Length: 193
Image (cartoon, rainbow, N blue to C red; front, side, top):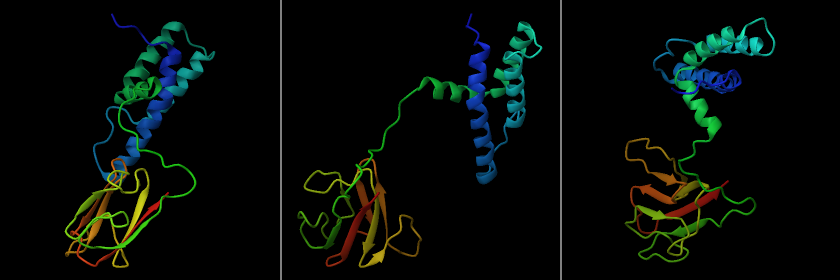
């Protein structure tokens, strides 16, 4: 038979789970989606406060506290699982490298040619390069990038109509441009904090 959580454990879970439930509701309002069933977060917060009051000396017996604690645990639904993961530090996932404070790496300012060299990480026809410190490139991982193409600031979103844009993966350092580089284009690739 599984072990029952103590009343303080349920209260701790509810402190986190109620916040997660409110965040979920707010996201649903912004982006659309299904409402929380069966219980809205305000009701969860009320029962959580009631349980805390009863545990800290309210006029409730141990059996009543257990019943209310079990009811609250049920009400928290999927949010109590997320709260348990937050409390226990489930781990996993990837961590984006954090750039050191202080000086930023030098930016790239170059004219596209037919060869790759230290000051020119891309040549005509290239559509991507890894700016991760390998193959003589500068390491921009962990930074955001600004990119100007022929002195025109570039967006990271396609606006359609054949407009150029770029993508940047801060984790692995892959810098991609659309369309591919043309001979004699002027490129400015600048890391920002």
